[in-house]
Length: 118
Image 1 (cartoon, rainbow, N blue to C red):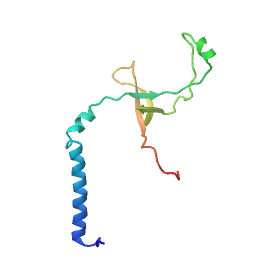
Image 2 (cartoon, helix red, strand yellow):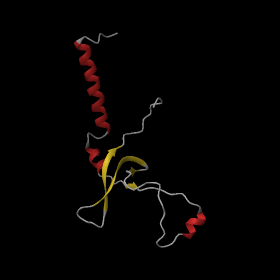
Image 3 (spheres, rainbow, N blue to C red):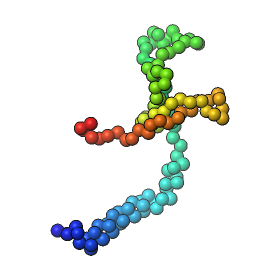
Image 4 (cartoon, rainbow, N blue to C red):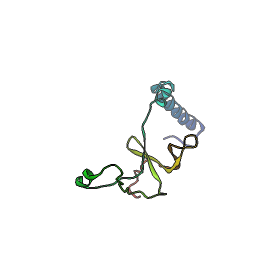
């Protein structure tokens, strides 16, 4: 058993950590592949809300029909990437082009918790 207070033991632990990190870098191409990954396009969706209705009502919809959504005005909308909520925000009008909407992010959603207690 090694003594955790022994400087030689600490140096060995640091060397093992650095070795593990450098081997991971080697597997990833030393950061060269990171640029390739960062250029991959992803589709971002903004979910304004949803509605459920019977097919009979859906068939009656026509031009000018209004479908009420489950979100209310002022509630944050979900920003979704690859089916996963990554953020929430408010709908805004884009300054440069008043005919377009944008999203002002108000919350970044972290990864789902695997904690069974909460």
